[in-house]
Image 1 (tube, rainbow, N blue to C red):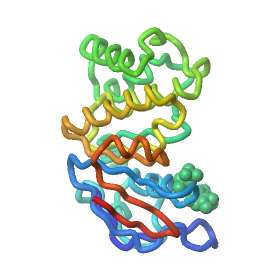
Image 2 (tube, rainbow, N blue to C red):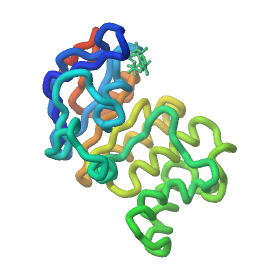
Image 3 (cartoon, rainbow, N blue to C red):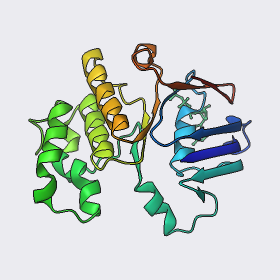
Image 4 (cartoon, protein in one colour):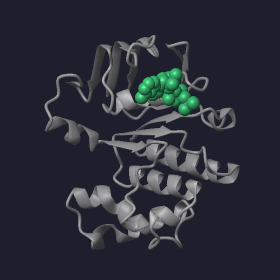
Length: 219
Ligand SMILES: Nc1ncnc2c1ncn2[C@@H]1O[C@H](COP(=O)(O)OP(=O)(O)OP(=O)(O)O)[C@@H](O)[C@H]1O
């Protein structure tokens, strides 16, 4: 589904943050991406989402070479990927319901056909009473859950999530993990960047461990 071959990344003239990274993310797989702070987890997720270009090596996304895509292909490929980045990227002028429904609206679906799904998902993440609120009035943990709901609502082929349980308490973290597991069971490949060992211990998943610019895989 996504393949890296000898990928290297540096910012400006700094030493490489990532060196000779090679791996494959198979369809329907589940993996955690971990490593010390500053090891390059967010950078690796951005490479996977094609919002950053590698300095060397090759990245193949859904069978296409990510470095030679034309500008029409990139948005089409990205639509197949659900993302939860640390800055959440919610639209302030839209309600929580509208933010979560956005991927469905973009695909041309009618609100009557998705109203119930969006409400149920927001209920599951504990925001059933905030459908009509706007993002600026939410707490960090609430915004994070809106971003998760938006990433999941259209059943992407792959989900990339950067510390998706970083702002919530342990019971909510377990609830969100169940949501990711369910999504994975219904066919989505999942990549979760996290420092949370307790979270990783709850799932028998592959671990991608970054350190000193190198990647090791376990499981
Ligand atoms: N836009 C940028 N310009 C220059 N350096 C950057 C940029 N983004 C990240 N870096 C550097 O690259 C390294 C890896 O950062 P990255 O955010 O990918 O790590 P991380 O593993 O996600 O860290 P954390 O766990 O703290 O979120 C760090 O040394 C960081 O300072």
